Image 1: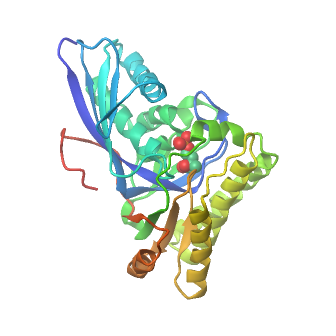
Image 2: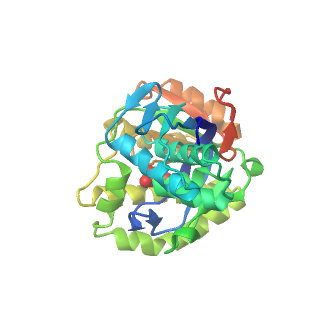
Image 3: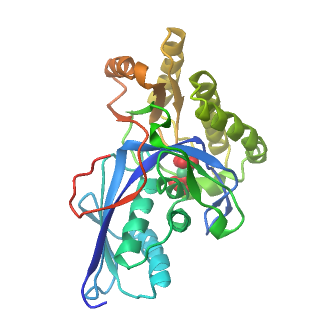
Length: 333
Ligand code: PMV
């Protein structure tokens, strides 16, 4: 490799309806339980990777800001996996841009590591299958495995690296479900998800959640297949609360909710009592993902605009798979 070899990719973040929380094998990010998600149209990362023989070390910029330290080290480890497969040593420059604030409960690491992995593989001259890409993206961030395939996605728990990958269970067109993410805080979370996965396994309730997970998965998967919001919403909400119960009782405990988060969770119940069918889910952060069918989305947006605690919101439909793009191409969903 004498000249820089470059490629760009776009990947959507995803919201899990059955969530991944806790690793069986931490280094490999092999999860304890199967998870199920939807790619998010308005939350995406575009990343350009350029392997450049003139570089002495890897470089990283996110949203125009140079990063060193742990963020760069994590990206370099991911690049090492790609370099190892491609048989190259060349260092790379990585430029990444998000369409949404990082570290706020919208899984920036999912879209980031999916886009990074796809762009790095292409720039290194590799063309892995979707399955291999998903396994590789998983090594950077578990949920990134689910941002490789399109639409509604399942990620299987397995004890072997090559067996724990994600795949589409239904295309984006299957159900016009909306996820309106209400941003109530832009603060970076105190316990990142890598530490969160570890702490959670020391919750006295962890084993109970994992034992219950196949039943939750089955119920939520079936409701998704049937496009049945009346079964889907309550089961997803309960599953999210279970994750937070584990986080709150982990060692160390993690309290991801802000006062605004809790106020909004009560508001969701009040909306339902008033006849607006909306349910919530949350990732490891304070912002609230509001789930409704397309026909109720306008009303929900009107309600959200009335709330002072909601700074802004991000309106998502189901989105497609990670894909290669031309550098500087507009980031359409
Ligand atoms: O991919 P990670 O390590 O950032 O974990 C994400 C975990 C949750 O977002 C809380 C749940 C999930 O399945 O996406």
